[in-house]
Image (cartoon, rainbow, N blue to C red; front, side, top):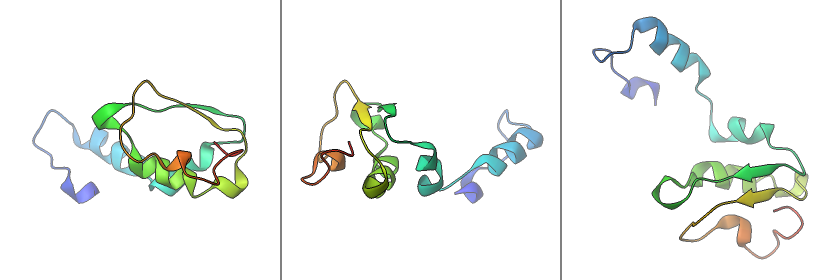
Amino acid sequence: MTDEIKLGTNLSSSVLTNYKKKLVTAEQAVRVVKSNDNIFVHANTAFPMTLIEAMVARKEELQNVQLIHCLSVGKLPYLRPGMEGSF
């Protein structure tokens, strides 16, 4: 992923270096989600499916996580049977 980013735009090399240091996997990113958290999920075409799938994979360790969204279209993994109590 970081190899796709090219210099030559308005980004200085120090900004790009700092950005690359902060990149994490979806699994790492959702480790901050705790039971009883409220999560706002962006809707429509910006729906973060990779992050949602990584969070749903943690269903056994999460309880009562509320997902808030205005409009999301498609198969929503946190609405699958067996997710009750986690999301």
